Image (cartoon, rainbow, N blue to C red; front, side, top):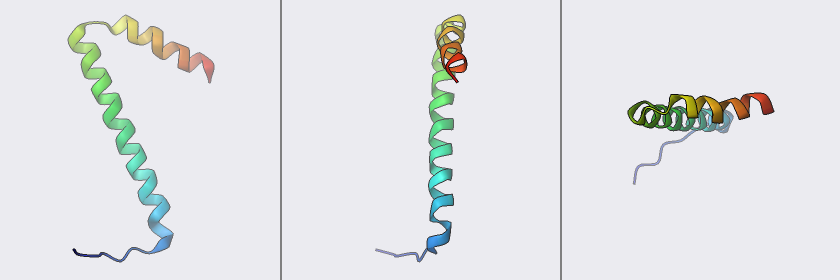
Length: 54
């Protein structure tokens, strides 16, 4: 197994990148499902709850 040395100072940046990419993938998947099932208004209703909450 190949071990790649990583400085401890960049580990938080890598973790943030992983989180952002995961969120982007989930959002893209959700948008695809909504478009294919033609339930855009339902997504606006559910998403609006989170917008109002913040």
